[in-house]
Length: 392
Image 1 (cartoon, rainbow, N blue to C red):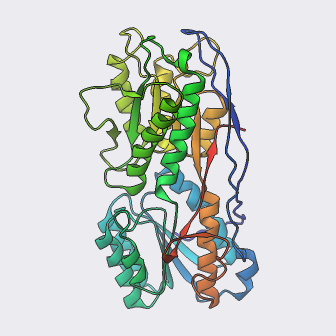
Image 2: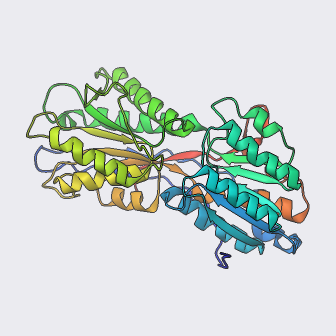
Image 3: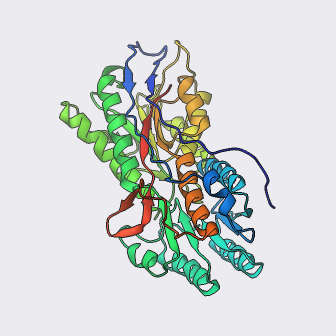
């Protein structure tokens, strides 16, 4: 399905402020958390500037791991706008969370004459899956740009990216989101400790929702979201967070389908609240989620149980996510969610658009990218920065 739209992708930057309104079952004192403002780099040459030099033969295949992922949907919207501005022919493919499906789609697209692959790989962190796609591109003599999902286990993607000189990756520094979320959550808990300690046992119990086992981003968000929150707490004389379910040695609940979905987190949270609640004096008192989709599912379950309604007469359980999707921003504005870490969909699409413009206009793949942060010793791995978001 070819898409023809007309819109320019924008890079969003802002300084955000939010206030958590705790509700009726406990007393409240409003506090505000200032957001850390991070300005994303802009491409040295915009898509509009290179549109006139693009080859009329350019035909781009864009392969998404899943159309159902909320953040990926945001990237797709922004990237469609970039491709429309470039004036190239393109086709989007939904891998539907199946690597075999995505591989078959790539094979078909190559056989039909696609001149560039843009791939959001299904099997994140698999060097074999990534190398297979690179080999397909190399054999066909066309460039391949990966984005968002890791190509190999942490620290092992260098050889994969070095295996083909017409290959690049656009993503994020995986640990950064976990560090930022942990610091944000930790400071919020310190500032609001007494009202968050619902059973007054001197400790804060938490739930953690992990997107996907083996995913580099999920691993680091799970690890550093907790570790950095505890570092902030302990530096302020508070005990470390305690996982709400002592029988769960993993100390997280994972989307078994690997989709980071609101449905998975909602199902878990509904079950959790049946046993862990204020009536039983063991309520979950803060929730860390690896993405905003899972945060949405948690908020929905809390709403159904009478929490996080954004009114003055109900308790609000702090919920933190990652992505800064439009839905999460709306929940934060309504006082139903506490904060998130912005993963810049527009910034990622703009960078990908720059690489596409380079390849379709005859420039080097990594031309016009000097303003971007790149991984040490891996010059074809570009990082898009995260930023704290707690409201407007």
